[in-house]
Image (cartoon, rainbow, N blue to C red):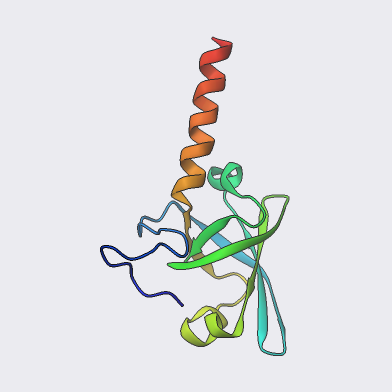
Length: 120
């Protein structure tokens, strides 16, 4: 778990703004020993921002995206994250807040705009 960034600190993860982009629904939860995986149904509004090994925040927790298939994405939760958050209390059907990575959003929307301008 990373502490909040202070002026002059090195950025070691991805930056969160705390702005919820949309919500998703937990479709599957599996546990194996001290690890857990969640499969989350993403709303269409974030599909274009989901990339395997990209960043996402779920309920304010910065995580790495696993596989992305048919509008769903996997999260693999390590023991340290389970210990320091409430993700292990989540159940199938629960709604979670989703914040997309701002860098991914900027890249996707810039490319879309440039392609649109080129076609026009």
